Structures are given as C-alpha cells and as structure tokens.
Length: 401
Image: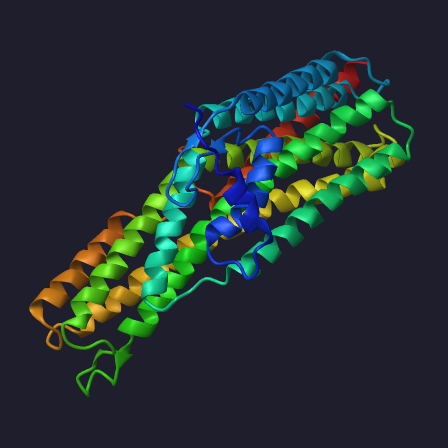
C-alpha cells in the first residue's frame, strides 16, 4: 500500500496569508533543509499531527550533497595552490578548507541519522503555540514568516556578493565552486540553527509575558499584595503555565538534539576561518604577507560574515538564558511576598514551579557547552592562545630561513 505524502497540504499552506500556525511557516524552511541535504524527509499526510518517511528522492539528495562535500574537501585539501610567503599560512588555508568540509560532512551525516526528529520539533512547537493561545497570547506567524524570508534572502545575498567578488578576481571555476559550496553550507547551517534558537526564545518570551500579565502583584507589601488572578482560576492558570514551561524545555531539548550539532558545525567552521584570517593580519603587520593579499573585499566580507555568525548565536542563546533568570527572580518575588495571601495549594504550586525553574530551564546546547556569552569568551581566549603559538612557529621558521 502506497503511503500518502503531506506535500500537497504542506505547500498549499506556503501561499496562505495570514499565517495561522507554525506549519504555515514551515514549507520554506523545509525546502531549505531538503535541498541542502540536512532534512531529507517527506512528511506523511496530516502534517500537524503526523510523522515522516524517507523516500528514494530523499536518499538521493542526501547522497548527492554528501558526494559533493567529500569531493570538494578532497579537491581543496590536495589541490595545488599559489605560492605563499608563509608556510604556516599555506597550512592554515588547507586547514580552513578541511575543517569547513569535514564539519559539513559530519553535519550532513548527523542530520540524516536524526532526520525524523525535525518534525517532532515542529509538532512540539505547534502544541506550545496552542497552549499559549488558550491563555490569550497568540503568535504573529505572518510577521515571523516575513522575517525568515528577509533574513534568509539577506544571508544568501551576502554569499552571492562574496562569490561575485571572488569571480571578479578570475579564480578557476573549480576553486569558485569549492568556495561557493562551503559558504552555502555554513550559511545554511547558520540559518537553520538560528531558526531553532528563535523558535524556543520567542515562545519562552511569550510565556514570560503571560506570567507577568496574569500573576503580577497588586498593591504594596503594606497593603497585603495579591495576584491579579483570583479564586480557583489561580491554580488552573498556574498549572497551565507550568505545563507550557515544561513543554518549552522539551522543545529546547529536541532542538539541542537535532540542531545542536548544526550550530556547533557552523561555529567550528567560522572559528577556524576567523583564527587564520586574524593570523594573516599579524603577518601583514610583520611584512610577511603583502597588504593586498589580505585587505581586499572578499576576505573582509567573509571575516565579517563569520564573526556575525558566532556573535548572533551567542546573543540569542544568552537572551534565552537571561529570560529564564528573570522568570526565576520574578517567581521568587511572588513566592516570598504571597505567603499569607494565597491558598495553601496555590502557594505549594508556586514553590514547585520555583523548584522546576531552578533545576530545568530551556537551553540550547550541543552537549559540551551552552550557546551564550561564555562561548565568545572561550573563542577569544582560545584564538589568542593559538595565534601566539602560530607566531612563534612563524618566527622560528623565518629565523631558520
């Protein structure tokens, strides 16, 4: 029996305005994942509550992208390059190419193994949206969709700009393909991982807004403050908020499971490029490399792009962490003030929620480290250490020569 796919339902929602739910925004994101080999799945009919399957086309797209990445890594690593005055920089260029494509290959294989998890992530987001809407907080999905289209268009436009600048320098077409595919892969990883962070961050932000609206304090401590939600509704609403918070934490865990590797891949490729290009700056200062070989439009735009990739991931990861901290202190304030002004059951629920916040909060991580400002500090300290070591090797090589 042939299984019916959900393509007709999925792509029919692409042109629906205004957008009603997260699955009206998914089709474009789904196409980006599928064409890049990072989401080779086909949804079954009933996309909002269904599952996924793998077709021959999905396997073919994955194999095609994997073969292209492997061939580009082999070509970039073993091809002949123009002579460079610095042997360390020559090795660095090889390492940048190898790291970018090794990260891409690892990301493609990981995404294919865990490919069915992506739809579970969307199903979880759909559930959270329905629960938030029941509390009066509805997401503007049309606004979210437009932002995604604009951001994706801008990111790919920057890639095309870099490739155009390189094309104007009369690079060989194979080299141009090698650089273009690496930029496309890392940018796609960045867009997909940033979407994951935004999905969790926006829903946690809306939950904080609901809690502040429904459970903010009235009056001062001297006037016996109480919650803005009264009577039996207190416990019902509080239980709903606790359930939504638990679901958002599950959503973050699913995002970390599927997208954590992609975020780490994007950061790894960006870090190696930033490291060796910063090292190239020092070689220009020491007159080892000519000024025009480093300070031209292509490398500078690339440097800014990769630096932005790392910064924006840390920014949204830290914003999510900061939200949870503010939520914790707000709830702690409510619990400490309302000891004698709410029912015993409601007070116990508030205490339980406070413990829940202290032990489990939404966080996107790759399993090794969280994505927040500590990531920036770690990258800066690691880069400084490696640049000092590279300069010592370069000085030793120059003295020997």
